[in-house]
Image (cartoon, rainbow, N blue to C red; front, side):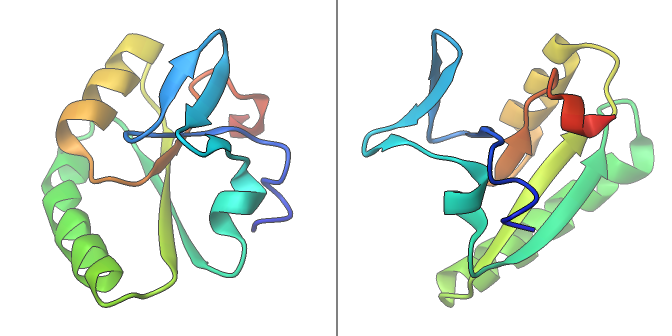
Length: 109
C-alpha cells in the first residue's frame, strides 16, 4: 500500500495546507513515508452516508485504542462526497486523527 501511495500527499488534521503542499513541523510527508511498515485501512465514506456516520465513532474508538497500544496502523479516508467543502467538513468534525486522500486526487477515480 505504501508503494501504491508513494507519490501521493495525504491530509492529516495535524498537518496544514500551504500553497498546495501538505506540511508537518518536520517537513513534507508522502503517502509512502506515512504508511510504510503499517497496516493500512482504506475507509470509503461520505457525509451523506447515514450508515457511515454511525460507523465513524466505532472506527475512531478502535483506531485510538490500537494507536495507544503502539500498533503500526493507519486509516486513510477516501471521500465519496460531492464537493471538497463537504468532504473537509465531514473529515475535520467527525473523523478521527487519521489520514485522508485529497478530494481532487486522481487516484480516487
